[in-house]
Length: 127
Image (cartoon, rainbow, N blue to C red; front, side, top):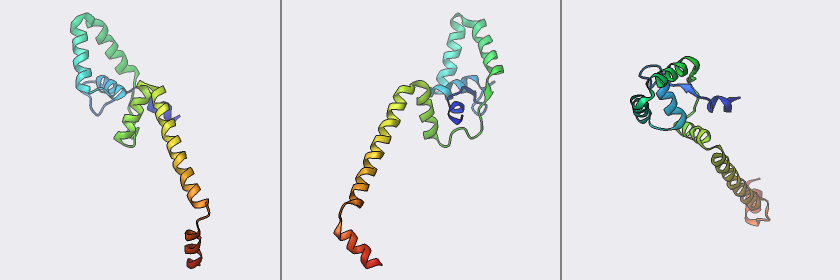
């Protein structure tokens, strides 16, 4: 359930200028909010006037506000932006990190379960 909350679109009321739609789009995609606002203005001036305004108002009315503590850190926010933009790549990265952790744990286990007489002698001296 928490994962669905992090991949959902929210209005960003903290960085808003009017309703938080552009700031929400920037937060969702990871694009700088200034570029989203410039793109919105250019799209409106390029002939999308009534529809961009209608879409902006509908999104502002339908979308929920971003929860206060949605992300634990900026790194967490970047990770979830990556999940939203390319879920397959992010899954492969997580799988790769788990494989690396598993390999390191196997190395540690091999080291501590192998017959290490020096380590066994030190443990016996401590008893």
